[in-house]
Image 1: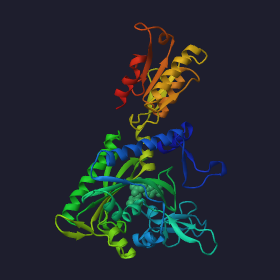
Image 2: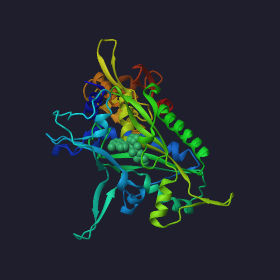
Image 3: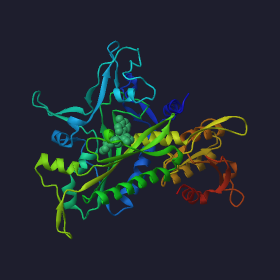
Image 4: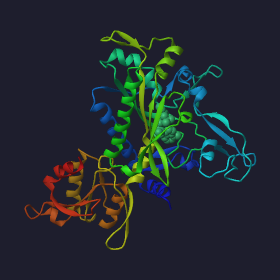
Amino acid sequence: MDIGEKITALAKRRGFVYPGSEIYGGLAGTWDYGPLGVELKRNLKNEFWKSMVQERSDIVGLDAAIIMSPKVWEASGHLTSFSDPLVECKKCHHRFRADTLISKPGTPNPVACPDCGGELTAPKQFNLMVETYLGVIEGEKLKTYLRGEITQGVHVNFKNILSSTRVKIPFGVAQIGKAFRNEITPGGFTFRSREFEQMELQYYVKPDMKESMKQFEYWKKERMAWYVSLGMKKGNLRFKEHAKDELAHYAKAAFDIEYYAEGEWKEMEGIHHRGDWDVRRHQEFSGEDMTYLDEEAKEKFLPFIIETSGGVDRAALFFLMDAYEEEKTKDGETRTVLHLHPKLAPYKVAVFPLLANKPKLVDVARKIYDDLKKDMMVAWDDRGNIGKRYRAQDEAGTPYCVTVDFDSLESPPAGGDVTVRDRDTMKQERVKIKALGDYLKEKLI
Ligand code: GAP
């Protein structure tokens, strides 16, 4: 099994990610996050929000609607330019993204159908926007779209944000939310989905190429450092510059942060110089004045935009891959462990009574569990032997396990303590129950 298959299996087994609509045979490109997956994603999004909005004075947050006026998508260029080249096999009629077929090194061009070897049609542009209809009366329904990127909700609110807050250029607007794309070939587990989440920053700067490129470089570094600060291995990360013919319709310059997975570099986040594309187009299409008034310099201008656009699902997937290890233990067994950064781990600690059929042990363990739950996500497990419980928590990425045994029931100084086991080192130490909360908080910061 390669790492992708192992992660897919672990994700299902432990409750990180399930295939969408599974009992009805599934729906391609959709995924449901289980009890552990939802925590991992929430932790990622909280860390993003903390670093972007909470800890900075130049960035504010926004949560715009998923469904917007169809005019937004005309203005943004998504109805004409947001497409992938599609080819179809003349024999089996399977469809493929032409660019992914051609870009494989050593593949002859034109290529044959990867499924049956049949001849492929010439590429046609296929728009990725997902259509939807609003209204109740047939024939009068408004055709619109589920947003293809979360970006436009920010730009249409540029003037609202200026007039309702105290921000001054340079400033940014951060947002996290769902986006939808009718991907031709969803796949690679959650890597290319039709419904996914993005975490973005739109940073408005003066329309000066030199100054804006400084901001571009600054945000490249910041975003790379963010992934590393949450434990991603530097060696698995790199920047890839988009060549002129690869740039999206709105971009003046673009770099991807790529992650090395399954023998390939894969896009995780894009840093884009959008010029004044979005504000200029919305000004043209809406007729609203989108200029910024610089009161000190007494000048009006359409700002340039530096964007950082990350995929929450891709980041979650790559953090799982990065953290995954099959480790040989001293007794010759293999343990599967997720070395997730404590800030990302779904549960910070698991609490076990040594024996489930000893009410006194269960009572003390329950009390510890209830107390810790006020401050952090805590798992409870009283099934099977302790070894099995450790293995289950290792696979869930839980940094610490706490076991209540008969000594825990004794009075201090001899008793009143529990065993705390470290996920990564597997070392165990005795900690007084009274000091446990502070001990864990210190370790988890
Ligand atoms: N606002 C710019 C924008 O949307 P993008 O490069 O198309 O740029 C940004 O998307 C990020 O969104 C990607 O780097 C990726 O992490 C994520 N993403 C894009 N399409 C995706 C898909 N089909 N499934 C999962 N994540 C996706």
